Image (cartoon, rainbow, N blue to C red):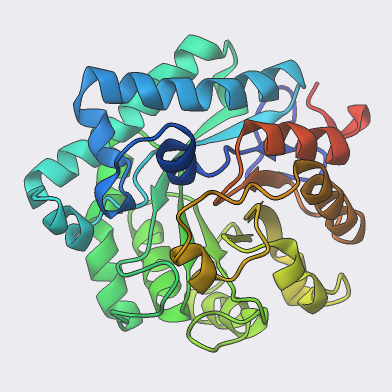
Length: 319
């Protein structure tokens, strides 16, 4: 923050939290049925919106109480054409849902926070295919054309930024970054890795980040890692490497299980919130640029509160 205003991308002097694992919380802890693991249909009913609000409220309140910022994702990880078709949602209705997702998030922010610049509305973009498999691969040009309608809907709804999460091959990330630039929105790219620290496509994280930067002219504001436990990527990160310094956020899984094991799980593995928080703290001590701290599959409000407590000393909190 400078003079009370948000500086994008966030610096290590201005920490921002995110939520945890939205879909896993709703399915495993709330007992909800989410066909195709899609949360966006909840926006279409009063009851669904109420469930989403109850989910996000404790995260936002934690950020406010601890004097840090918050990046509020729209529940739109599955809200693209392919997944919508599986749910019998037309392209026209899908565009309305993506716009409404931003407006809904903005209204929640207005209700819970008196400082809108500390709560950013982030249009969440998921992969065209499965987040755990590099299927349905596209060229960068195809990916730009495919994801542009969702980015455009976010812009029309008034989003502050967009993030592509659970990316598992570089071409899709490149296409989304180009689409966001063409439509005038800041963009964040978050890759996911397997237990060996590589993307599902077999590409190294270093190669994916460096190639995305090279082929987009460094469009992404920063990079993140999500949907993997710290033990899966800790060993490949070095504070001495330039590409590593482009990583400014973490949204780790609670579980140390592989993606294949998680895909087959019938019960939630919440891991150990305190252990996860200590691992975040260790990573942040090495990589002081890490400024966006949140969770992914299996994490809930307990994990994020523990991470904040472990990683954010009073001197780093927003004033």
